[in-house]
Length: 96
Image (cartoon, rainbow, N blue to C red; front, side, top):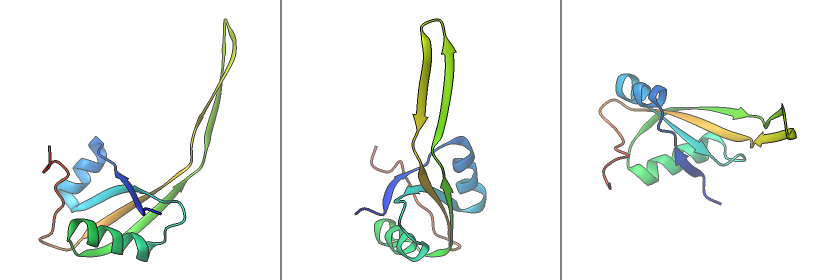
């Protein structure tokens, strides 16, 4: 099971990384903070001060259209925000 699924690269996450040295990842639902910390340190070679996690539930919505009822679902996921130690940084764009 892979702990880190993918980094989140949005405007808010990028701003957080530039100003506060915090990086955001989507992680496995069953991963705890120690596993996340070890996985990020191993993958990127950085030192981590803290890890904060958030669980997002399944989002369902229903739309009533001319063709009938359309139902959609966005799956549940877990997000982790890692605070790096002073002087460390992660470059997601280095291998482009």
